[in-house]
Image 1 (cartoon, helix red, strand yellow):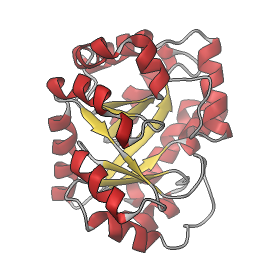
Image 2: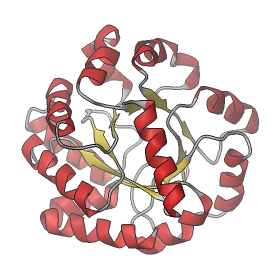
Image 3: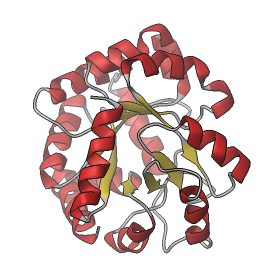
Image 4: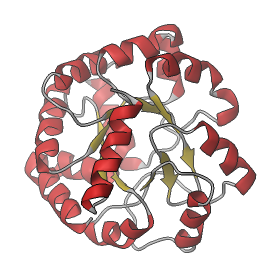
Amino acid sequence: MGIERITATFAARRQEGRKTLIVYLCAGDPSLEVTGKAVRELAVAGVDLIELGVPFSDPVADGPVIQAAGNRALAAGVTLAGILDLAKELRTSLELPLVLMSYYNPLLQYGLERVGTDLAAAGVDGLIVPDLPLEESAPLRQAVEPEALALIPLVAPTTPRERLLKIAANARGFIYCVSVTGVTGAREGLPPGIKEYLAAVRAVTEQPLGIGFGIGSPEQARLLAPLVDGIIVGSALVKALHEQGLPGALKLVQGLREAI
């Protein structure tokens, strides 16, 4: 469970000569029942790790697609407790890692004193908190580390080397490399300087590197795959699921799986 499950997944894909495929779903868009069905189908289609997004009213790192998905989920009454219930149900039949992607406020409101134990009890393996800086992460880290849960950090093209070293020293599971300076959302082409940026991150850590924000097609994934250990796709999948239903989401994932 936890860090070990994430680490084992990256190791298994590496041994197979493939990259780890990570996808993001906004939990509860349009319902937790649909999210659960999507997770199960995506796992069969070749997804290796799933991020369950916790909807929040002020998603500062997200573009319009995920913002809209979060609003739909909130309107449907989705809560962190409900998402944990879903994760617990999924864990009865799924072995792949499940990670919550949540802003810090929902975790604070839930109560840090029970975040670690409740996530572990639900079979969740880690957390990504995009608005939590390293300097303020100690309380959450203290809550999750006793349960062997991964607190997965984000780095960006603007992160200086000195800060990369500090972040890497505290990283667990993998490091989430944000590909652009901006919010989530599929983009055309690859940003300039991406090879140099990823090489700089690779130079300071032995943790697996996953890259996300802006990857929306198998072609982009194929270009980036040699530079990292995992490809992360969010907005494009959320959009496909909303506009085309599960068949559209599965088609995108199958294309991504073949590409990497």
